[in-house]
Image (cartoon, rainbow, N blue to C red; front, top):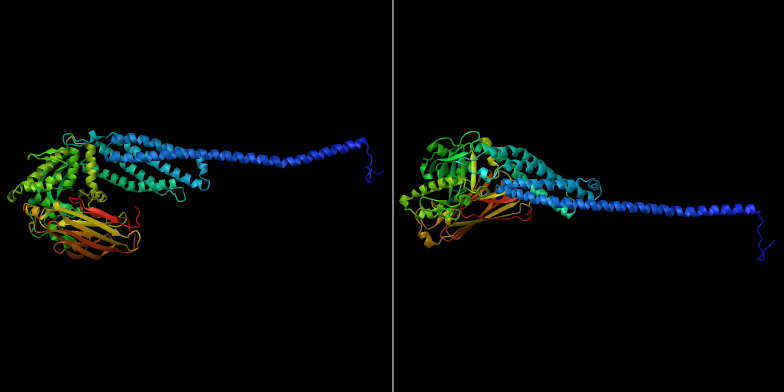
Length: 627
C-alpha cells in the first residue's frame, strides 16, 4: 500500500503499541529538555556564587577602607599630639603633658583596634593590598607602644610636677619630683628605643604614596627622637646627684667674656663658687681672672704638645686663656686647677655661661635692679656687660668693672632662685643656651662626665663621623682688646660628601670690622688693642677638618695687612688650619681651607663655630645630600 506520493505507508499498530510509543517519546523529550536546562542552572548558580563573592569582596573592601581611614585619622591625631607633648616638655607644662598623654593613648588605641580587625588581617594576605595593610598596622602598633610604654608612664610622674613645684623656696629646689622622674625615665627610654627600632624597620617599599610617606616620616621622627630621649634619660639619671641628693657638691661657674673671643666663646673673665646640697643652692666665693696670677712658665696642668703648638703654652699658664681650645674638658680642668691652687677647696664640676645665654635667662626673671642704678634686662645685658661698662671708669679704676660683674652674678642668681621666676620661660631659656653651646658643663666624676660628654653641654667636637661629619670654625682675639664687640663673622662649607667616595670639604670664613676709624680712635684704652691701639686688630682663625681628612690647600683674601697662615697641625684627631687675620677699622678678610677625605663612611655634613657675641652666620652647601 502506497500513499499519493508513492511512499510506503506505515505499518498498522495496535492502540496499545501506539500509546507506548507516545509515552516513550514524551520521556525522551523530557530528558532532552532536562539535559538542556542543566547547564543553564549551573551557570546561574555560578553567577550567583561569583556575585556573592563579589558582594562580599566589595563589602570587605569597603570595611577595610573604612578601617583604614579610621586608622589614618587616629595616627594623624596621634602624630600631632606627640608634637604637642614635645612642646609641652620644652616649656615645662607637665600638667599639660598628662592631659595630652591621655588623648594620645586613646588615639593610638583606636588605630590599633582598627588595624586588628579580622577582615583587615585577612586582607594582609591579598597581593599588593596586603603589604600596605601590614605597614599601616605595624606603624599603629609602634605608635601605640610609645604612647603606652613611654609617654603615659612619664606623664603619670610629670603630672605631679608643675611650675610651682619647681620654684625654689628659701633657696632650695624640691628635688623629690626630679628623683621620681629620674627613676621613671630609664624604663621609659628603653621602651621607646625598642619601639623606635621596630618602627625604623617597617618595610614600606612597594606601598602606595601615602603609606610610604607616612613610613618615612615616622622613621625619621623616631630616629631623631630616640637619640633625644636617650640623652634626656642619661641627664636625668645624674640630675639628682648633681643637685646634691647624695651629699653636698661644689661647683665653679665660669663667665666667658665674648668681647674677647676664644674658641669656646670668650675669655674666662669671672668665676663664682656654687654650693649645692639636697636641692639647696647658694653662692660662695667669687673671683675675677685677675685674682689668678700668671704662672712663670710652668703649666697648671700637664700640657698637650699638639695643643701648645696650636694655641701657645700661655693657655696653660693664664686662666683667662683656658678657653682657647674648642674642647671644654680642657678648659674645665685648667679652671679647676687654678681655683684649687689659689682659692682652695674641692671642685666637683665646672659650668660655663656667657652673657648671651645670661640674657636668655633674664627673659625668665625680668629686669634686675643694680646698686649702680642700672636695670639689667634681657634687652640690655649683652650691651651693658660687654661694652658700655668699659666706658664708665678710667683705666686706673678698671677693677670696678669686676665689682660690677660680681654684683651682676649675685643679682641674677638671686633672681633665678626667687619664686617669682617664670619656670616655663626658664626651662626654655636654658634649652636655648645649651643648644647654642653657650652653657657648658664638665664633671670631675668619671661616670657623670661620661654622660655629660654625650650631651649638648659637653663642648666636645665629635671624635668620628658616625652621627655627623663636623667641620669646625673657631676664633681667638690676639689683640689684648675687647674689640670683638665690633666683629662680625660668617662661615660657609661646600662639600661633595654625599656624592663622592673621597670627598672634599672647603670652608670659607669671612671676618668684618664694623667700627669706623673715627669711633675706634675714641675707644677707651681697655677696649682698643693693648698692642696697637686703634690702628688694627688681630684675630686668629682655626678651621678644624672632619676626622679622617687631611689639609689640602688654603687661600687668603684680605683688605688689610697680609693675613698669615700657619702650617697645618693636628688636634682632637683632626687636621687644623690656622690663620692670623689683621683688620683695621671697617676692613674685611676672608680665609679658606680645603680638606680631603679618604674612602670611608661619612654622615650628614655639619658646620660648628665659636658662639660669638654676634652669632656667626653658617651655611652648608652639600649637593646630593638629603634635606
